View 1 (cartoon, rainbow, N blue to C red):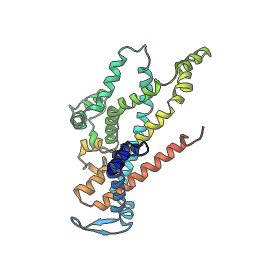
View 2 (cartoon, rainbow, N blue to C red):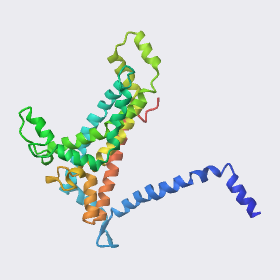
View 3 (cartoon, one colour):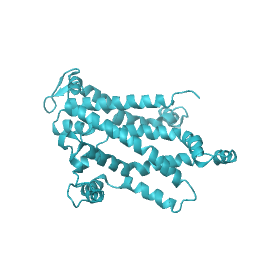
View 4 (spheres, rainbow, N blue to C red):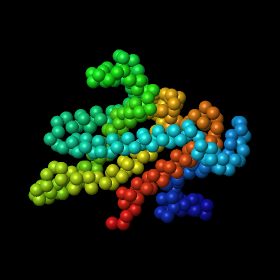
Length: 299
C-alpha cells in the first residue's frame, strides 16, 4: 500500500510539475528572498560586537539622511547612471544598426571584437586604465591632450575627470553587450516592413525613426532597466581605481560605502540600511521609467 502511494506520488501528472520546479523555488527562497528579508530586519539594529546587536528602530535611516558620505555616494551614482544611460543606449543602437547591415565588411569580426571587453577581467582592465590615465607627463591620455595644448591632467584626482574615466570604462566594458541585445532585436524586425517603406519612398533616416526605433522599444526598455540597476549598483569601476578610498569621495559609490561600513567598520546594521535604500531607489526609478514608457499600458 505504501509503495503504491509512493509510486503514485512520483508518477502523478498533478504533482510532478511541482517536484521539477521545487529546486528552483528552494534556491530563490534561500538565496534571494531570505537574504532580502534579513537585510530589512538587520537595518533596524545596531551592531555592538560579534553576535551582539541592539534594536534602534529607524535610527540608521535617520543617520543616512545627514551622512555626507552617503549623500555624496548617492550623487556620484546618480551622475554615473545619467551619463551611462546617455551613452550606452543610443550608441549601441547606432552600432547595432550598422553591424546589422549585410553590406558592412567584416561585420562578424566587429561583433566578436566588441564583446571581448565584457569577457576581460575587470582587475586586468583596471591596471591598464590606471596606466593610461596616470598623472605623469608620459601617460597615454596626457600625451594625447598635449597635442591640443592642454597641460597634464590628474585624471583620478578631479571630480569631473574621475567621473569621465569611470564612464569611459563602463562604455568600453558594456558597449558590446548592449550591441548584442539590440542586434537580437533588429533581427526580429520583419524585412517586409522595410520593403513596404521603400515602396512608399521612405529614406534610411525615416525608416530608422519610423520602423527601427519603435520596433526596438521592448529591447530598449529592457536595456534601460538593467542599466539603471547597473548604474546604482556600480562598484568595480570605482574600486579598481581607488580601492574604496578616493580623495574627497570623488569615486565613492553606494555599494562601495556599503562595503566599507560592513567589512571595514563592521557596522552591519548601518550597511543593511544602505542596501535597503539602494533596493528601494532602484525599484522606484525602474517602476517610474516603465510607467513613462507605457509598459503597463494595455494595447
